[in-house]
Image (cartoon, rainbow, N blue to C red):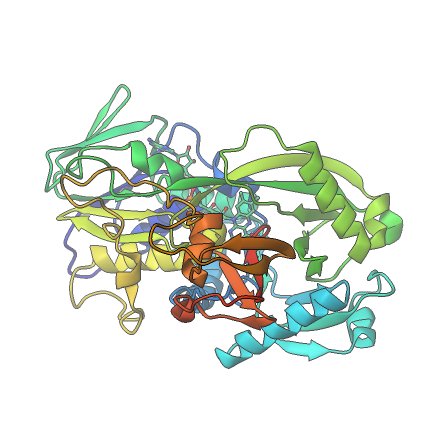
Length: 472
Ligand SMILES: Cc1cc2nc3c(=O)[nH]c(=O)nc-3n(C[C@H](O)[C@H](O)[C@H](O)COP(=O)(O)OP(=O)(O)OC[C@H]3O[C@@H](n4cnc5c(N)ncnc54)[C@H](O)[C@@H]3O)c2cc1C
């Protein structure tokens, strides 16, 4: 449906899932699109598991993200149907739900707390007896501790979905420019996109910066340093082939907590299963042996049949993380939209990102109105920009000794004894990790919400600081 548009075409930089879905939505609005990428689908999208998990991916303290994930999950079903109408290629979408398993009693206590938190936020998370879980998934190991059913968490196959989007776009006449974008020229409005050998005229066009981690390197649209504080978060993932005799190994996604670590198994159509995914703060290179060992050990603990599977592929992808785990999504100039920083949720949030781009293109009062109740200001691409003239960001120094605070006290952090001057929970977290997102804290067994992190630590407290070590 074509409406009263602000622009007559779009130039999308980046052909990962975010750029491709945005491009698809632009063509749905009846506009021509040019997509710039030297190597489409070579980034995080190529490695992603593909879980559409607005509930399983919930982390304590990330309340601003929940409505975005839930709305995008709703949008994804319709998006997949429209893509399916536009191409004969499969998307790998499956709506067979997710089962979450706790391996031992400590994992069960953690899962129970998480389930309660999810339910308090209106999400559907149903604890079920293990014998019922085993009826659905007979390949589960004996001796597990607890199970929770998440009937609304689904999945798709990112590489297949991306191939389907590219085919649909080509059928609609989209032009792919296989070059790296370097600069947006002409300040505001952007008049052209300068690439390695060509320059693309953007007069009358909207430009969408959707190139994942590469967005920091595209200059010209901001003064000084890039406002985007993107960071690489690498993750190992494996593709296994289930022997005929064990097929199907599982009917839906199985996620598990195993001694505090997370692992997931995603069935694909055919005899493939995906086992993922680790998480470490670097830009990856080769998959690490220890990380693959962890995945296999934990996966086999929950689904012993994995031992019989063939290893088809091991890989490491790099997620585009942000300091608060929220994407950078929104208009940053008259004709420039930023859509990146989707971290662990890019497959899930692609539908939302695409809808925002389409609504922005259609101009005020002309969009779908479907997002009008969401607070998208939390995704403001300028929110981490350094104030002009400020010193570059420094990680917080550990609050080991503070002048003027002489008295010391003892407490434990993750079982280890500590002895420092009195500090708050927030100061303790900052001394452990500079990026406090994806961190949960419990004091004496009770989770402390982020809003209460200014509470002082008392002598004798037992503190658990959990970081998100694995996931999508
Ligand atoms: C192991 C792993 C598992 C994951 N599992 C899940 C999951 O189950 N569910 C989920 O929702 N998310 C998951 N994610 C996260 C998800 O993969 C990402 O959030 C998402 O793929 C980001 O998509 P993107 O299009 O922004 O970036 P990318 O997929 O990284 O694509 C960026 C594209 O931009 C191109 N590019 C870069 N620089 C330039 C430039 N200067 N000019 C032109 N093009 C450029 C690159 O070639 C690339 O094709 C996972 C990630 C990993 C690594």
